[in-house]
Length: 178
Image 1 (cartoon, helix red, strand yellow):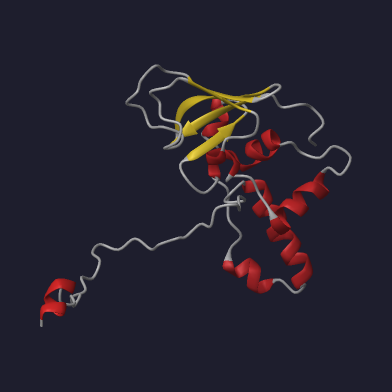
Image 2 (cartoon, rainbow, N blue to C red):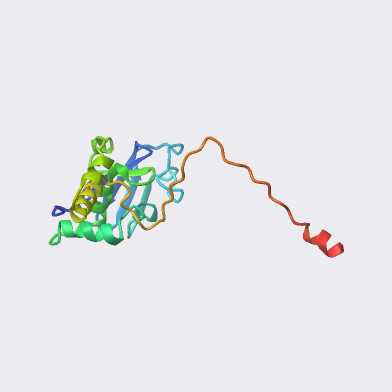
C-alpha cells in the first residue's frame, strides 16, 4: 500500500491551494503564490516568506500525524512497507481536523462526500467485533481527524454565549490602605 516514495504533497488552507510540501534530504514547504495576504499554513510560517525548510516535518504539519491505536492500525495495513510521514499526511487528506489539508494532487482536495454508517445499521448489527472493525476501516478511509499530537476540542456552535458577571476583588493598594 505504501511501497512508493511519496516526495511531494499539495497543501491547502481552508480548502484553497496554498503550496507544496516536498521531502528530499529535508522537508521544504513553498507557497505557490507570492501573496503575503494569503492564509498562512501556520502562524509560525507566514506567507510573507515564500519557502521554509527544516530537517524534520514542520510542527504545524506534524500535529496532523496519527498516533496511538489508529496509528498502529495504519501500520498493519502495510507491515512490509511502513508509511512515511508524507504517506500519513496524504492519508489524512483534506478531511483532517483543522484548516490545513494535504493531497497528492490538487484535485484530491475536493474529495467526494463519504456516506456515514447509519444509526439503524449500527443498532441492527449482531456482532460487535465485526461492527467495530467495519467502523474502524471506514474511519481510516475517510482521513477524518486521524491526527493526535495536539488535543482537539469540538465546541458546539451557539448563536450567543451567556455573559457572566465577575466579582472583582478590591485592588491590592486599596486593600492594604484599609
